[in-house]
Image 1 (cartoon, rainbow, N blue to C red):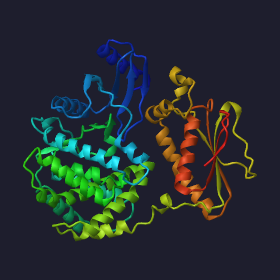
Image 2 (cartoon, one colour):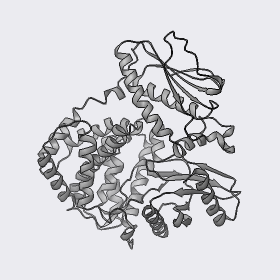
Image 3 (cartoon, one colour):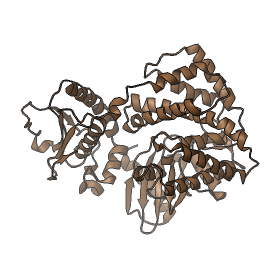
Image 4 (tube, helix red, strand yellow):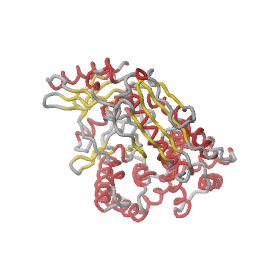
Amino acid sequence: MEATDLEKIISDLFESWSNEKVETILPLAPSGSKRIYYRVQGKTKVAIGSYNTIPVENEAFVYFSKHFKAKGLPVPEIYSEDLSQNIYLQEDLGFTTLYSFLLNKEERFPPHLKELYKKVVEQLAEIQIKGHEGLDYSYCFPSQRFDKQSILWDLQSFKYYFLRFNEISFDDIKLEKDFGTLAEYLLEADHDFFMFRDFQTRNIMIRDGKPFFIDYQGGRKGALQYDLASLLFQAKANIPEEDRIELLEHYMEAASKLISFDKKQFVKYYYAFVLIRCLQVFGTYGYRGIYERKKHFLESIPFAIKNLKWLKAYAEFEFDTKELFKVFDKIIDLDQYSIATDSKEDSLLTVDVKSFSYKKGIPKDKSGHGGGFVFDCRFLHNPGRYEPYKALTGRDESVINFLKQHSKMPEFLNDVFHIVDKSIENYIERSFTNLSFHFGCTGGRHRSVFAADTLAEYIKNKYGVKVRLQHRERGWAAEEL
């Protein structure tokens, strides 16, 4: 659906619900899914307009939200829905996620962050246990429970998207047998609870110091341990082990106030669920990072390996999976992600990244090397065609969200990254001194600015070389990163 058509049907739903005219409707930053979100504002009311082309996910989210809200659980209220058009309006919980607290912390895991995590695990126990009561699991998609097939799907993803992509050798028959052994062990745990499935910091909003949960449309019946493992062993959260243990104890204490609870039995299976969650995210990181070249997922792999290394060294397992543990040793020994973390600051290379308008021509190269790569952004959907964005630039949040959500910019930049990686690595190896990348669009204001900024940050973070960034048509001072 075209962006203008989508904005119209969401605006109509908002006006029908609020009895107010829409004053602003702006796209929000995309999540890991293909769902599209808008913040819609009238004179006094605001809502998040949501669009998703998978009807069963919409039905699940709306039903779960209403069920949880009726029980007083911390989820967004559903204001209105038109599921025949795949849209609904939900409560605006603000901009702040728990993940943003991880990015802003001044020390590794400060006391205020631990206290916030304690509130989160308390509410997790509530939604898993109270949310389960009376829940109609027929709304779940693709499966009503975290059963053997679901576990094996995760393990196959790990095998094909991470092991195969990294050319890690293994005995296929023995590994498949180990997968079955692990699955059977996990299913011994009590699994009559609501399992969030993707319980991580990006799906936890913080408003007025309190946590709220979103994106649980993939939930199903399952074991308590899985969601806690997802939270405490989220790769880039990098929570210190002593704090993980304290939060585990705090969660068990909270759960014991709601149901009869055997802590020893819980812990018996807990680290096995940490293991399956780690393997599941390896599969995701392999597909979204190695295959799709998405930066966030690639950067998470070293942290996921760190978690696996800790599990292998300290966790005790009651099942015998020799081939799987041989594979773990090979993962821990991987070195192909070193470029993502090793700085090349001693390199002689300087990379120039520029944005420009084709109306004024391609920038001239002053290095004496005859120029470099020129990428044409004019085929991408142009936010400058719409009145709310005309006076803005590619550095404004609403324009950034537009380009990420309503254009092919993410796919385009992933292709650019493939070219950039090969060029920079070759130039560093050969001790070359100059390389340039130029991005052009019609006015040099929106698409080219965002593309140049993104590439400059990517190069600096990945290679540590000197980067000079210039937006020719904006009149801004050149930046050295």
